[in-house]
Amino acid sequence: MNISNIDYEIAIVGGGICGLATALALHRKGLRSVVLERAESLRATGAAIGVWTNGWRALDQLGVGPMLRQKAMLIRGSREISVDGKTIRALPNGMEEQRCLRRSDLIEALAHGLPPQTIRFGCRIVSVEIDQVTSFPVLHLHDGSVIRAKVVLGCDGVSSIVAESIGLKPPRISPIVGMRGLTTYPKGHGFSNEFIRIKEKCLLLGIIPIDDNLVYWFIARPRLPKDSGVSREPKVLKEAMVEEMKDFPAEITEMVKNSDLDSLSYTQIRYRAPWDLLWARFRIATMTVAGDAMHVMGPFLGQGGSTGLEDAIVLARCLAKEICLDERSNDRNLRNTVEIGLDKYIKERKMRILMLSATTYLVGLMRGDSSTAKMVLILAIVRIFFGNRLGHAQYDCGRL
Image (cartoon, rainbow, N blue to C red):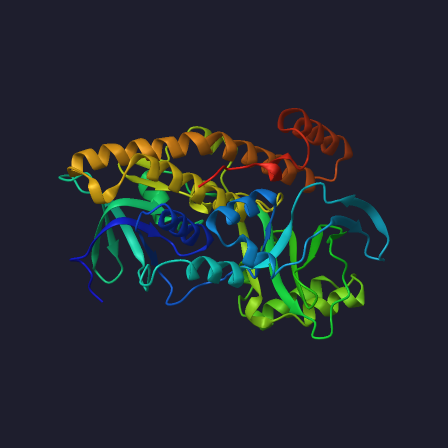
């Protein structure tokens, strides 16, 4: 499909959580956009996502919070247990709201709120440049098509073409790999509504119930030489995971063994270090990034998705405050106005993502080190410089 003669006012690259949330936020502010998604349909890679208080505040601003709450039970606390089932540590939730959502539920809710034809599937962007005459972005697609836009918002994840075009350094590769999936229990799973963690040697297993019949689980462990040859075929992945869990209780191993094949995924964790974000340039002309394209971080705080939802609210608010695309006088005024709005968005988000990135990095170090002295030192740094352990989840990105 050649769409080289089509121009867009606002083009959002990436139809994941952040891209769809940004499009919906802009729509609710009266700004039209198009979402350019490389896949042929909506994607829900990653099985499920934990959403904390800050994420639910953003979802409420998008108008989808009440509906999504019906699909996920409230998590009331967390518990760390040994492989023999004994409780090592139990903590109350300590926040207003925490739930685990199926990614497909969240993606579909965001997409359903958009006007028809907002999402264009099969649009794989291979490069982005700034037009030397107009100073607006030009997107080149894999089929040779060209899209010209007044504003480009890169919500295209870890391997972001837009982030690369802006000049952001590629994300760093973590020594941690992750495997995750969903398990359905037709007669009920029997887990309490809490986040359960089990650690055996270097392997960490997390379990979060979504509703009475569905459980989300994930495994994190150090990357091993054998991982380079690991098959991504779901059945092989499952067999490999079950083998690694041979010392775990039978009911936990069965949970993984009975998981839904379509939900399984293997991930090489990537992140942007705090010092990379500190000096990063997040805008060129009328082009910027959001979500993982901007601040991909390790999973140690579970804030990746919620932070992307925050980005969507702040970005739409800052743009809408500065521009009205239907009443512009000329392209130069529009360009200047958009740049002001994007700069305000970046200024508002930068300290937030720096704090989150630094906290996530330190917590990741603490969980990956067995030295008690080092763990205590890192914990002290986190508490002194970043406040209480759940402060990051109480953040309020404000009204749309």
